[in-house]
Image (tube, rainbow, N blue to C red):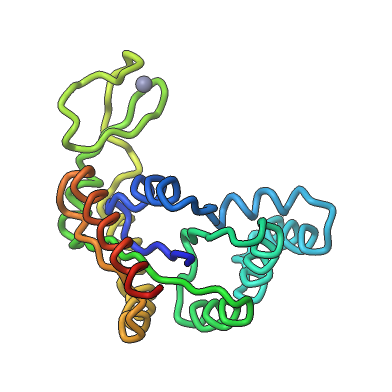
Length: 214
Ligand SMILES: [Zn+2]
């Protein structure tokens, strides 16, 4: 079973995805990383991506699908994948669903639920180490990093840009989640509790889902 992650910035999706991948032996597909790798390859797809990036264009959906298909073809047989950052729109989701079906792959979405207000609170109160740039959540009590650096509020964490990103998620990505929900392939995880609690309930729910669908 493959998994597709959903969650707004601040939901802890990135942190939890690492735990999930480790536990269920999933290979992580992350679009940014794939683009960087492929752009350096001397393949047809690599050249196409390089041109798109150099022109400063967004990667069109058909190329996104080509990248995913290429990824799936190149991983060892029976490897399950954790997709992060894809699909982003209903259009992408429809093509993604078709590709999964064609490739004989089953998948479920994992949605880290968090309110917009809480996400904004978390994002505007987190701090970054002045020296090593490590990000610390609001709950971190010390004023210094483990490296000894001073913790400062991140300059780019301004409310307007955070709100824009969150609104884009609710407008463009929520319809995908609703569509998957109606197919009973969404696992909802409450992202409000502390990290360890979220991990615990995520593992429990994913295992239950796997048992139910096996
Ligand atoms: Zn530091």
